[in-house]
Structures are given as structure tokens and as C-alpha cells.
Length: 419
Image (cartoon, rainbow, N blue to C red):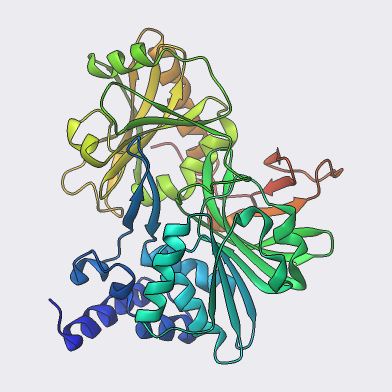
């Protein structure tokens, strides 16, 4: 499909879908999405695929991990709504990728605004410049640099936006904001990632909007201190967790092939509730939590229970021991694993010697989340203070990073009765 009218129709149908889902709320973001042709920023992909609500992988690491993509339109729309860009503003984007999001930002700032977008890979910078020129997008300055330092030459900025996952909040991003500026970034909260819109309030940042997300990690000086361990001889099967642990990867890989004990939880959820609630709850309350994922061709080997599933990537949350693990799984679901609204019963599978203990621990944590009202990201509030800032606030969690102290709070939730 290549006709101009057909492509316009596909683009408008995608925006209609996002509008109906409540993802696109403002006329300004809607107009930008309708105006900028996404297919020109992914020229090697069938144009029809470019107008599906899916991320498009554009660069892979040698070990089979994706390291750059055109983000899912739904997630991009959420972030643009969080950013609240106005005419004439100066915007810094970190993580250029294909250049598509920078083009949307250029539409939002209008004729008197300016967009600077930074990427660490020179090949991606050159591609983005070419894509922007092809789409006749101006008012975008594409720079090859490490986003950890922002871009001082263009500061201060009314808005700063990251389209890559960050473990910490770099001082440069705060210092280069205007007094009432807004920073939007995918932020790691003990391994769970949330897209947080922060408003600058004096010496600290206050969240004004939070949504679940999943972005590839920032590279360079602010590289996520996350451990990524491949399992097995074939690439594509990985364990992700924060910090360092002593693990017998050969034993874990063998355990995944062996029969596993199954525990039912009696609790029904949708994949959306898992992604937007349970995953964060477990990350904040279970220090041994990790993610087990199969990427690319590995998704066909049935090694990972598909708790969360999207094209070319399936994964689940696990509790880890040196030679054992317990994984969240779907029970009693019929139909497509890609339908995130369908409900299913949560189960826990135990793999390896000692996995049964982890399974009971994981099941108890699921029940705790359920009993506490199934809190989700929509109710979460975060303040980002300088490191070591004293706080006497009651909080769900305090997370100390290198450059900030995060204080997290959930308002009281209505409690669920047991199922």
C-alpha cells in the first residue's frame, strides 16, 4: 500500500483509535499525530505496518537485544500529553531514534518554537536528519551527543523529554529547565518503569502525571546499572534485574526445561492491571524481583510464560535464587495473549530446587497487592529531592539514586474482598 490517500486514511484511523481509547486528549496532540507521516521515519518497513499501534525495532545489539526503536504511538501520545507543549517553547528531546517524535514536537512548538534532539549514535543522528528532511520538517536541530549532559548550548528549556529509559535523574536535566519547566521521562523504580511528568518546584521535582511504560535503556554516562544475563547458548532469552547477584545461569536454564510446580492464586486480572499496578507493587516490595524475557526468534521456543506479550517480545516477573526461580503465569485464558483487556487467573510456577519457596512468596505478594486495593500508577505520587534530602513524610518507598532521592506515595485504596 503506497497511495497518498491510503496512507492518510491509515494515519487518521490510528489517531481515531488513540482518541477513542482516551490516550489522545488534546486537540494539539491530535493535530500533530494527524499531520506528521510516521511511515517516512521508518522507510524500511511496510507503510501499513507503520500505522499500527506498535513499536518498530530499528537497531539491535550483537547479543540480540533491541537498542533503538520507533516507540509505540500510544505511548508517545501519552508522553506528549504529559509534556503539555505550547507554541513558541524550547524543547530538548533525549533519544532521537528515527526522528519521528522530534517531528511531532516541532509541530507542537509551532513556527516560533525550537526543538533540539540528542542521540548518542551518529548513524541514528544521520538517519533522523534524513527522515526529517524527507518529511520537510524544520525547526529541529539534531545533535550527536551523550544525553546525560543535556545540551547546554540551547538551555534553558521549557520542556525536556526522554524517549529512552533512565535509572536516575541527571543534574543537567534539572539545571537546564526553566523555573517552571517540565521534565518527562521513563524512570526506573526498582526495575519497574514508569513514564513520569515532573514539574520543577524550587529545589525539587513533583510528579504531575504517571503512566506505565517500557523503553530501552539510556546508554552512555547515565547507563542503567541493570544486570542483563543471557540464558542458554542461543541468543534471545534474558534475565533483567537491578544490582549484582550470584546466579547459576546454566542451572536456571535447565530448570526452565524441567516440569514445574504450579500454584493458583485465585485472583483474576488483565495484562493491563499487571503492567499498570502489580509490576510496580512487586518491584517496590520484593527486592529479589527480576524479569525473564524472550526476544525475537526466542519467543517461539516457549521458554517464557507469556504473562505480558507484544510482538517479538514476551516476558514475566520472577523471583530469583541462585539455581531456582518462580514465575508469574496466566491461567484459564482462552484467546489472544496480545489482548491486554482480557482477564485471566494469575498463577505461579516454581522452577528448580527451592523454587517452591519462591513460588509461595510470590503468591503471597500478589495477594498483598490485591488486598491493598490493587494500586496502580494513576494514584502514585513521586517527589524527587537532592541526594540525602531529609524527609519525614510517610511513604510507600524511598528510593535513593546517585543524583536524587525519590519519595513515593500512594493514596489509600479501596480494599478488595478475597476472591
